[in-house]
Amino acid sequence: MRKFVFCIVSIFLSISAIAQTRKVTISLEDASNGEAVSFATVSLTPKGASKASKYTLSDASGNASLEKVQKGSYTLKAELLGYKTYSLEISVADKDLALGKVKMEQDSQVLDAASVSAVGNPITVKKDTIEYNASSFRTTDNDMLEQLLKKLPGVEVDSDGKVTANGEEIKKITIDGKTFFLDDPSLATKNIPAKIVEKVKVVEKKSDQAMFTGIDDGEEETIIDLSIKRGMMNGWFGNVMGGGGHDIQTVGLGQPARWQGAAMVGNFTDKRQISLILNGNNTNNRGFNDMAGSMMTAMRGGSGGMGRGGGMWGNNSGILTSWMGGLNGVWTLLDGRMDLGGNYLYNGSKKEIEESSSKITYKDDGRDLISDSDGWSNTLAQGHRFGIRLEHKFSDKTSILFEPQFNFGSGSFDEYSKTATLTRNGEQRDSTNRGFSSTNGANNSWQTSGFLLFRQKIGEKAGRTFSVNMRYSYSDNKITGFNQSMTDVLFDDGWQSSFVNQRYDSRSQAASIRARAVYTEPLTDKLFLEMSYQYSWSHNTQDKNSYDSA
Image 1: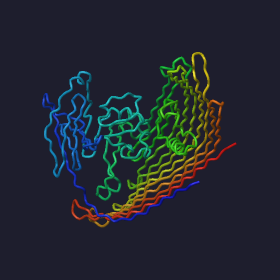
Image 2 (image 1 turned 30 degrees about the horizontal axis):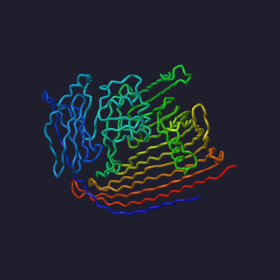
Image 3 (image 1 turned 135 degrees about the horizontal axis):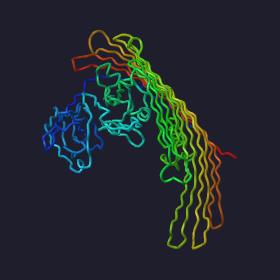
Image 4 (image 1 turned 180 degrees about the horizontal axis):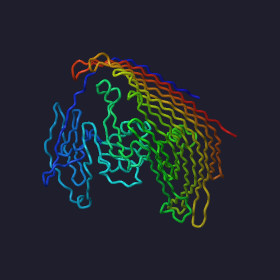
C-alpha cells in the first residue's frame, strides 16, 4: 500500500497595470464590383501556431476590427463562402495597425454550387458580441440547438458535441443571461429545440472578478447566450420528438431497432425560468456529460495493470443506450437584488459490445498462422448531479456570489474475451496457443466543488474595491474488481499453462482549497494598483490493493 500527500501554501503580493495591446483593422470589398464583403470571418494566427488566437466578423460595411492584439507576427485570414481565402502576413508593433481596403476575389466554383438567401440581418457584430439571427439559418421543426449552431459562421460542433466559437471552447450556455444547467453545454445543445431560439449571441465574457474591479485579469471566457422568441415567454411551452428504425446495413439480420426520444417543457418569464428535459436513445448520442462513466474509465485505466482497463474496447464501438432527466430553475427575487438558480440531473448509460476477428499470416514455409479472437463487454453507469447558483446584492456596493455543486455516481463492468492461434500446413491444423480473460467490477464516486465571491466597493471613488474569492473541491472514488485469465502455450515438450485469479480494490481521494483577497486602487483613469494575497492547499491520497484469489 502506498499513499501520496501533496501540500502547497503560497503567499504573494503583486502590483499590476493594464497590459498594452493593439488593434488591427481591415476593410473588405468585392474585387469584381467594389461592394462591401459583409460577415466574413477575419482571424489572426500567431506565427508558428496552428490555431487562431483572435476572430471577428466584418460588419455590413465590410469593416473588421480585432481588439487586444499582443505584439508579434501573425497570419491574417479573411474567409467567406463564395470567396477565395485572403491571407496576409502581418507584424503588430507599438501602434495600432490599419490595413486599409482589401479586395476579395469570388470563387466561381463555390458560387456555382451554392445559393444563399438571407432573412433580415443575419449577423450583427458589436464590441464583444457576435449576434446571429436564428431565423436567417434554416432548420427543421425537429432540429435541436446543436443543428442550428453548426450552421453559424465561426461556430463549430465536433463529433463528440463539443462546441467552439471563434476558436474558443464553449463551456457555458445561458438563456437571456441566466445560466442553463450550470457548466454542461451539451444539455442545452442536445435538448433545446432550435425553433424556440430567436437569437444566438457569442459573448466574450470577463470573469466576475474583472467585471467588479474593472481590471482585466486575463480570465475571459467565451459563452453562448440564447434569446428565446417572445411568443414562448409568459407561458408554458413544450416539444416532443421521437423516432425509430434500423441501421441500413443490419436490416433483416435480426439486430435490435434503433430509437431516440426527447422532450422539453418550459416556462420562461422576465423573472423566472423553469425547464424540464427528458432524453433517451440507443444511437450512441448522449444528451449529457457522462461524469460517472468517465470517472470509472479513468480509474480502471489507472489501476496499475489490475484488469485491462477497457483497453480492448474502443470508445466509439458497440451500442450505447443512454437516458437522462433534468430540472432547472432560475428566479429573480427581492426586486431584482437576488438571482437564485438550481438544477438536478439524473443520467444513466449502458454500453454493449461484441467483437470477433480472424487473421491469417502467410509464411514462406507453408505453415500459415491463423489467429481467432472473440469477446464481449457490458458497462453500466448512472449518476446524480445537483447545482445551485446564488447571487445577492446587499447594496449598490456589496454583493456575494455562491456556486456549489454535488455529484454522485456508480457503475459496473463485465468483460470476457478468448483467443486461439493455429498453424495450418495444407489440410492439417495444429493448435499452438489458446486462452481466455475476464474482468468484472463496480465503482462508486462522489465529489463536490464550489466557488464563493464577496465583493465590496469602497467609498465613492470608482475602481477602489476589495474582494475575496474562494474555490474548493473534494472527491472520493472507489473501485473493486476481479480478474481471471488462463493461457496455454505449446512447446516442444508439451503444453504449459498459466492461470491468474486476482481481486483488486482502489480508492482515491482529493481535496483542494484556493483563496484570494484583492484590493484595487485607481491611480489614473487607465492605471490601477492591485494588491493581492493568495493561499492554496491540496491533498491527494491513493490506495491500491491486489491479491490472489483461490
